[in-house]
View 1 (cartoon, one colour):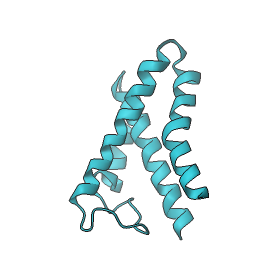
View 2 (cartoon, helix red, strand yellow):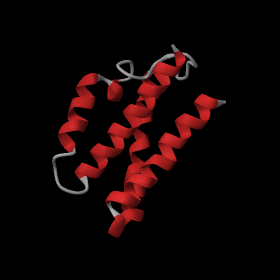
View 3 (cartoon, helix red, strand yellow):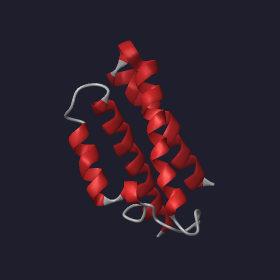
View 4 (cartoon, helix red, strand yellow):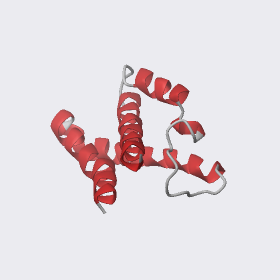
Length: 104
């Protein structure tokens, strides 16, 4: 239950806080962009089985690899909206990484 709370707080509440604190003028738009980055999880559909409770997503799914994460880091240095997308993707990877730590 604790992992569930941490996971979904980091996916929904933390991006809201970042959007509101750092992008106050456009916080609603920024928050929606960050939420849309959760579509990165569509790469889970390529796995067999699609869902495995104890599997660590980091470096398993194509859009969760270290190479993809490097691209997300580079994205934060571009202009809006690419930097916001990069931030959202990095937050997503951080959330999944925390899940990996909790599981082990």
